[in-house]
Amino acid sequence: MKNTIVALALTVCMSTLALGAELIEYVPTPGESATVASPIQEDASIGFSVEIFPKEIYLGDAIYLIVYLENRSDNDVVIDPLEYSSIQFSLSASSVSSKYTWIPEYRTNALNALESPPRTMEPGEKIPIRRSVLEFPPLEDWNDQFWQPFRQLLATKRSEESIDCKLSIEHGFVTIEHDVLVKRRPEHETALLEQWFNDTPKTLFPRVDGNRKVPYRGLYLEPSGKSNIQINGKEYDPWTFVRFAFRKPSDPNNPTTLEGWRELEASLTPSTMRDEIRLTRLQLEYYAAEPGEPGERAKTELVDWLKSLPEIQRTRMTSFLVSKTRALFDSPLRDKNRELMRALYDVLDVRSQEIVCNFESLKYNDYTLTPPPGVNARTPFEEVIKPAPEDLAHGSKDLPDGFRIWDVVAKSSPRVAQYVELQESEDSIRLKARNGFVFNIRFSSLSEEDQEHARAMSQAAAEKPEEE
Image 1 (cartoon, rainbow, N blue to C red):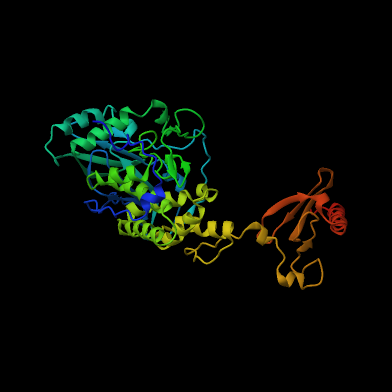
Image 2: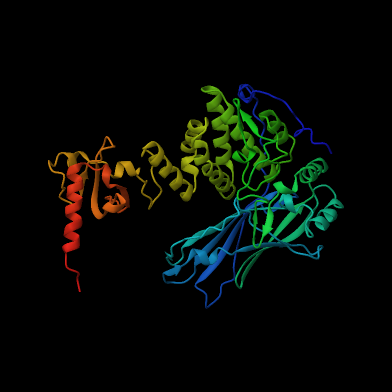
């Protein structure tokens, strides 16, 4: 079936489309959340539980999932979060002989060393350790040895009929199972998925590298440049607005205009696939809108819709929006992105609130957002080493707390820091800020008075007898 949505080659000013555009009627995705827990074992202090939404989907849809770790003992338990990073998700159906296992996709081929400090869990405490979106199936696996016979069997069903599946969540010797119903999708939508699969070059799908999916070629995921989305005269690659790894549709099949995204969304059955497309469309609607009332209306539509979603689904979508803040900071969309983050702040999960709060303080020197419990907003380093009014009023370069005001010739503002070490032969002096951060500056950049002081400190340290 020819995808008339994607084939649109309209060169339309998106901001004009956003003006006065009628709201697309949104019918909530049907379905309920479900929670299932691992069996209680007498000798195990730690248990698992899983929350899933929705438990009934169409072919091509995604489910949103959170795995929780629970302290089921009466005592504190110290856990290493990295021990639980190898959770595996798989799917089986009695009518299909093979089993399907989801393989996580990464943006880069590089192997990053994971670090996560141990943490203490109190009795009865429950913490999220994994948030995932599982597609049924990911587009690149459309013809997988599990999904091809599965699709063929589903095609024999009547409209809205389903296949019972068993979703397994495994870690070590613990397995949690939950039933998921996969329904037959309307024919024109299934044909659209088939076309997106056929029209995506192999190099734009990921390749499997051990237990992960990575970009087919190159170190990072590289867009084709053939389906860039234009906003107010500037082009953006589709991954700027499409959630990473979601290819229904993305490069090179995605609409390139706001009108194309609107038509695509309106053509789909209420489902999580449609919700993902709506997320992209609402972003474009907002970023393309003219300032004033059109922009406020578009922002309200996006924010109110996200607030209406089940928390498990909303959290995954808002965390994606937060992840784009740094990329959009150097773009014409920076101010609108900042406004959106602040409008969403109260419904973000704790980790996303921490990111936004720190971004506000570091990039804008703005501390008006209330950090989540246990989080202190970071202060820009230039502010950390800047002398406070009481430092300047002290009347001496050497301060009562052991720190010193250092005059840097090339800088308009002096630095407050503590001497650590002088390496004059390398034109370097090491200093420590009040927040404990150790940093280096060029020794020759200091005033002559401060250079002499540093030499004296170095000489005193060299003459100090070593402690036995």
